[in-house]
Image 1 (cartoon, rainbow, N blue to C red):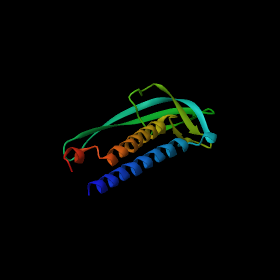
Image 2: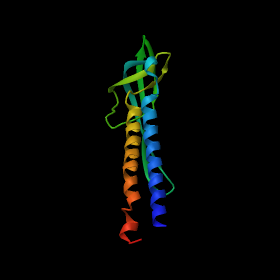
Image 3: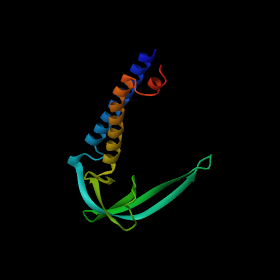
Image 4: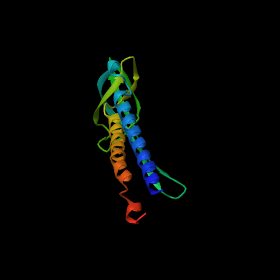
Length: 145
């Protein structure tokens, strides 16, 4: 029974780890705006709203809404940016990429990369953990099962 549990646990970690790595690679290879249609522009953070919410247990969560403005060919664009990091400050100039076919579609050039690297790191940890589970290093081994 012990050996079967180890094989199942190791298999689950291996499959989940590989899935996370593949999803991370997919995100890296498929940016929000394809490179052939991506233009680069400097934008300005016009507003940052801090929104605090409280759940039913009284736990508070803080989110941020970042508004940006930029110009393409003399025409103004902007609105809600779908990401936030602690270096963003109101009035700060930031790099943006936009879809040259529709400048209303824009993002920061690094936003999806962070998520992709986090997913790939988690996947790597799961893949590296699976052999240890297979060999029985863990709680069951210490308990003499």
